Amino acid sequence: MKMNKQKVLVISLAVCLIAILSLGSLAWFSDSDTVTNTFMMADSTEDPDKLFSVNIYETKLDENGNLTTEITGDGEGNTYKAILPGATLSKDPTVKNTGKYDQWVRIKVTLTNASVWQKALAAHNITDLATIFGGYEDTAWTRGETIEDTKADTLTYVYYFNYRLVPEQTAILFTSITIPKELTREDMIFTGGKFDLSVKAEAIQADNTGDTAIAAFENCWKDS
Image (cartoon, rainbow, N blue to C red; front, side, top):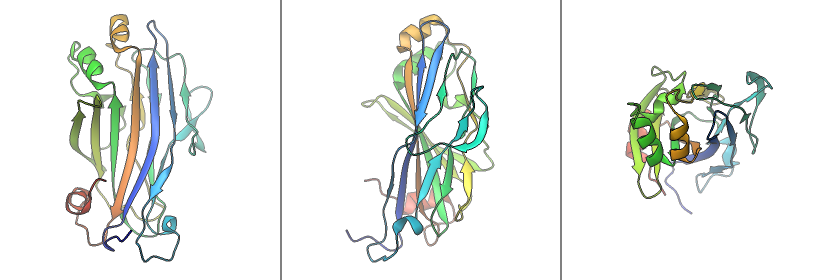
């Protein structure tokens, strides 16, 4: 497939977080990494993963729920047990430039079962589900559009990294997730006690695409 040399798109599908909230006081969280799909220039003779690519991963947790120095990936994921409403869970989705050139990066965080969660949280005057993400730095990231897909019943928050991500550099979107303490037993029954949270990283070459990540994606990115 012939592609424009100035528009090399790299997609990393990653880190799926499944949160299971029990009807009582306990719940379980789990997540996993998925494959990375890379697109290269048609006339490139080098391994595409060495040119333009990104990876997204998170740090493993120890038995006490604390971050370690190990990295999850390739299908591995952390498991959270016996979680109560109001619990703060360590989680650090991290995107890395694994290619050879600077890239602009954005991350999409998607919640499933969105309509029931919106109704449950609205009863407690919580209208922004993104407030569950702790450690988010608005100096490093710009929150962009919110995409609501009523057919798929999903809500997606888009974040743009404010700087060019140079080769081997990493950027962390947030460091924790907090289960809203306002949720009650009735809320758990109403939501079915379950929601999925997926994190997807997208990157595009930084050269000749714009002065910011937002401009680059607006000017050059086309969803397939």
